Structure formats: C-alpha cells, structure tokens
Length: 144
Image (spheres, helix red, strand yellow):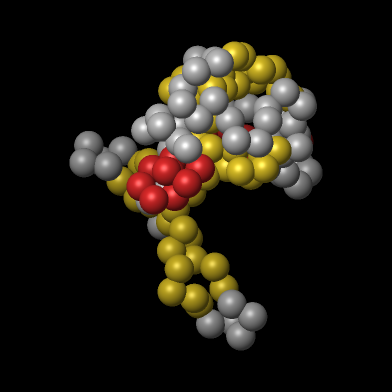
C-alpha cells in the first residue's frame, strides 16, 4: 500500500516479504516513490528485468558508530559515510564520502537515495575526505 506524507502525497510504497513457509514475516519495507517510479518506467519501457545500480563500496554512516568506535578508528567528522571496504579505484578504505555530485551525504540513507537517481554506467563524482575532514578530493566513479 501507499505511504503518504502530511500533505497527502505518496512518498513510498509499503510491502512485506514472504518467508519460505509462505507466511508473511513481520518486516515492513517502504520503497521510496522515486525509486518505484524509476523501476516501473524502466520495466514498461524496456520489458526486461531491472537491476539495481550500485557502487562497489561497503560503507557505514558515521552516526552509526559509537563515540568509543569513532575514537578507536580516529574519526573526527560528524557526518558522511565511512568507507569500510572499497573495490572502487580512487576511493580508499577509511575515507569519508561527503557528497555525490555536489549533494551532501550525511547518512547511509542519503547515500542510497542519491544513488537511486543514476543508472548503470552513469559516472558520478564522489567528494571524499580523510577521517579528520582534510585532504578533500573529487573522484569520478562509474555506477555498476
């Protein structure tokens, strides 16, 4: 079913995932309407399966780390996503992603939502910094 905001606008489509025993699990998933429209348009236009685009990065929101974990790693900045592991050339493990194509990335949700705007083989510019917010650079990566 649809999820509405306070203005009555559809912002997401709610769904549930069936389990192996054909009973419904107690997990509700909300698919952002922008993503839903993108996938639906792709399916209608191309009549083939849709594959979600991604970058070969294992990341985690900085806000998801405890103060103790931040201290151990040495993270000083308060927002962005920490690159736990990387298979993307130019984006090293231990860097902080702060922007995608100039759009501020504060959390994993921001990162995921911003990637929904792009298709496979599109090139995006990631702004990355070190764990104290220095050595900022832009890196162009291709969406997979």
